[in-house]
Length: 276
Image (cartoon, rainbow, N blue to C red; front, side, top):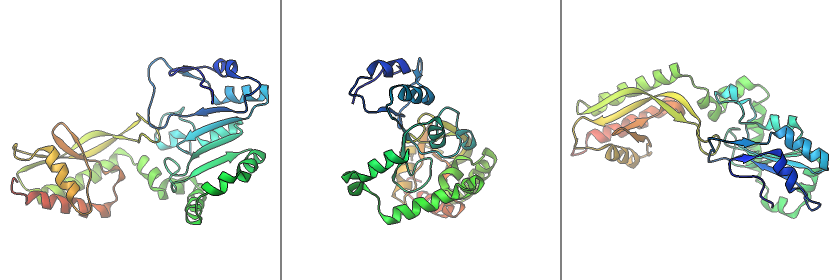
C-alpha cells in the first residue's frame, strides 16, 4: 500500500506521481465515520478511471455505504456517491456494505468487471470469508425491492426512516408526547421541539435531517436528564434517547407506531420513582 496525497487535499496528479512499474491497483476509500471540512479537494471517480485506463491499471472504489438510489432521493446532499455512479464511471471493482444505506443484512459486496470478480472468487480467502445462505437470502430479498425504487423506499426500514418528512415526524412526536404527559403527570415537562436527526457516522458522517422530538424533563431539580435517560434504559425493552439542554429527547424518526407502548410504559415507571 502506498499513501497518496494529503489528509485534506488529494488530486489526481498525486495518484499519477505515485504510480510505478510495481503499481497493481488504484484504490480510493470513502471516509465512513468521519468528515473532513474546510479547504478540501479530492480526485473525482472519472479522473481516477481515466488515469487507470492511461496506465492499464484497474481502479477500485470502496463506496462504503452501499447506496443504490441517488442521494437526493434520500434527502441527502449530492456528491456522496453511490454504487450505480461508481459502476457507471467505469470503476473496475466497487466494494460496499450490504447494510448501511443499502438497507440489507450485514455483509460485504464486491461488484465490477467479470474477469476480476472471477479472480477474487477463485482466491482461497473467498471461501473462508463468504457469507452464509441466510445472509444471501436476505440480501437477495433486499435487492429485489430495488427493481421498484418507490417500493424500496416504502419497505426498506433504513430508506423509509430517511425519507420521513417533517409533517409525519411532527404528528408522531405530538402523539407520543401526549401519551407520555398523561403517564408522568404534572411533575414533568413534556413538549415537542424542533431538532435535527443525525443520519449516521457509518454512512454519511456530519449529515443531519430536520425532525421533531419529544423533550422530557423534571420541573424541579429532583431528577436530572441523566437520571431520566438511565431510567428509560433500565426498562425492558430498553429505551434510548439523547440528552440536550438538560432534557431527554426522543426522536420518532426510527420508531414504528407499535413501539410507542414500550416508551409510554417506560415513562410510567419513571413517574413511580421516589424522587418523582
